[in-house]
Image (tube, rainbow, N blue to C red; front, top):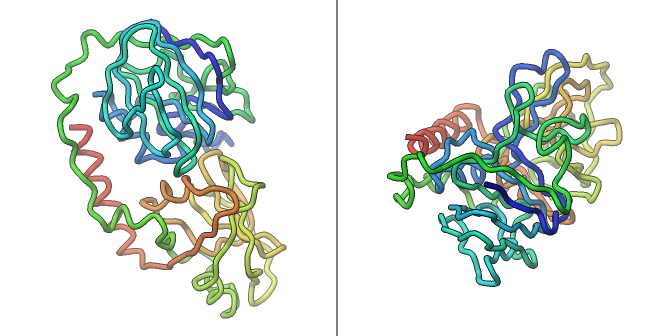
Length: 313
């Protein structure tokens, strides 16, 4: 039971919900960039949401299935096809042995997720199958997919099929937000240390996502953000979506492969419900931010968590 990689795509990696509990040792969390798309893909094929998925970046792979399988592709629309026929997004689809899944031109988004019923058979590292490319561990042999790889699949014959095809609970509209809406954030630990002009610019101006961005962090260009008074910061723990501002004044949004600690002042924190939208942004696109209160951020997070729990159930 396996899948053969005929073409690897630009960057196709195995990811799950992350490697947690080891940050105190300097081990990054890693994991998927778009948690909603990952969880949806697994839910559609009847997997636990913690199961690994293939995260496809911009240009997808070509995969040949050696066995019949149930698959789902979610997230970015990268023109997925099975045997040359369009594959619908966000839907479980049965493929037969010998079928080829391929991708064409990008239509929207950046990252797509491929789930296979039963999951990919890969040994976890520190409790996760997520690839950490810089560290050379996790994923498939500690790297992204390459031509000629053969990915083993778990046996799905005994999995309960009753959930497959069932209509999934939907997110509330305020959780999803419009694709072009500002990215919602809460004020960061050092928000009050930034001068008034920088606080205003952060909330009103547009920032461009630069090509020098990756799974570790999104580098932005825009109005220079400055502290009211220079300060020496101590390094402390960092979370997914923390927005640091180095000395050049251009913010960096920390993403899935972020380092565990850092000492730059943090002007804001991206709300968890908007990290998936941010993860689907292309270099060159403009981003605006909207500061909301912590109570609103928690309400949105709880609403999303209830939907995730319904999927899992």
